[in-house]
Amino acid sequence: MTKREWNDLIARRPVILDGATGSNLIQAGMPRGVCTEEWIIQNPQSLTELQRGYADAGSQIVYAPTFAANAISLKGHGLEDKVEEMNRELVAVTRGAVGTRCLVAGDITTTGKMEMPYEELYEVYAQQIRSLCTAGVDLLVAETMIGIQETMAVLDAAHEICDLPVMCSMTVEADGSLFFGGHILEAVVSLEEMGADAVGINCSVGPDQLEAVVTNIKKNVKVPVLAKPNAGMPVIDDEGNAVYQMGAEEFAVHMERLVKAGADLIGGCCGTSPEYIREVRKRVF
Image (cartoon, rainbow, N blue to C red; front, side):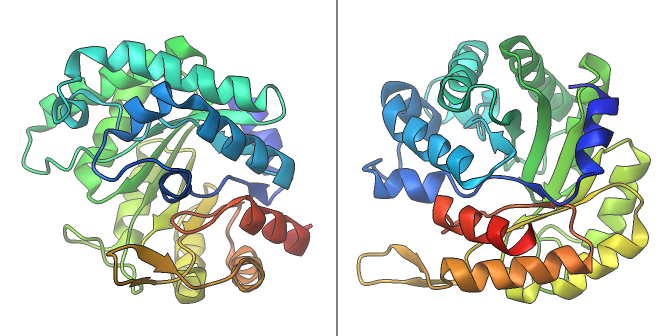
């Protein structure tokens, strides 16, 4: 995807992203504690059905399930030597599911190793980004990022390797505070200066708590703003499962407000499903 194509897409805002992956796969039978990426490769039908559901619901961009397919995260499962192979196979599953109906974003996330030197983070992300580009993704997204240093490493690596658009979304408290210090407003300004093609928030809390955050992000940056929140705050049931209580229609009402507050790219994170994306699309188009 070229930057001109990206600009043409954003000009027709809002752009509809997909919803949750992990919480839906657990409902489809994925055991807790396994390597999600490996499980998807071994059980592609569950993801295929989910992503076809998002395409049918109106998603224009679907995230490939490459979330933690980096060498550091995969090392915890003894799969650190499978980065290239796994990213290629995971992108192929998504491409097979949605065909040309949706753009496919290569998904990148935090390593969780905030103490790592910047140079090492850069190399880890560069390896994954090369793999994603070879696999043929249309754009990149760094999502659920918990610190600015890692997100900057993703941008540096991406700009060195390719010309694809890069979206960056961080997970925040309801007041915009980052989990590892600082505030989302400082972060998005820095990321815009580094060349991010979209900045914003995902996961964290529900859309009902993010209107002020989105409004303030929009006031501080010129690039498109992304909002992909959870289906409200979860309640833990007797079996230890996170239960998200905000229904699809209520979620869509709040997402419409986020669009009015300045969100250009919208979707859902934990607890959402194709039903949520369908309701969002009905509200904003």
